[in-house]
Amino acid sequence: MKFCFTLEENKFADAGKRDVFVQVVDPKGQTISIESLGSGVTTVNATQSQYTVKQEIEYKNEPQDYCTYWGKDMPYDPGIYHVILSTEGYKLGEKDFHIR
Picture 1 (cartoon, rainbow, N blue to C red):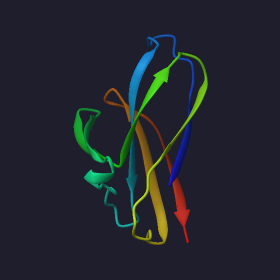
Picture 2: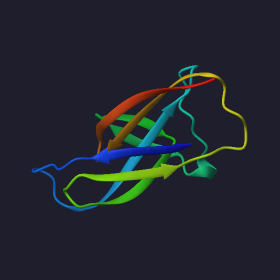
Picture 3: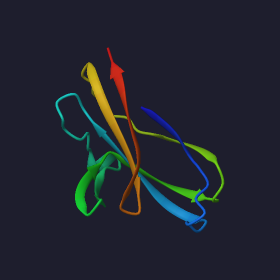
Picture 4: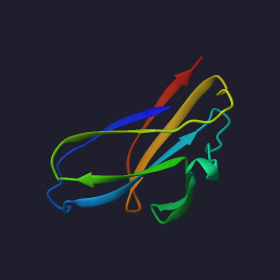
């Protein structure tokens, strides 16, 4: 899977390195998480949450596009998947996609 997103300028945030966490929730409501592929646990909105993959980015406090990749050996079940992006304990955004 390839996940691309844009971070906009934030006048209240300092530029610098950030970990961005990508959580992929499958059609059954389970987070796709394989520790050997970089998955783990983080905190989002004061609640512990599994994540699928994280990527360290260099935030420059200007609009910038980023992409990260994650894959597993098994095929993905068909259905609607929900993706949540977060950093520093806060949700950045979310989006659904469909696998047929």
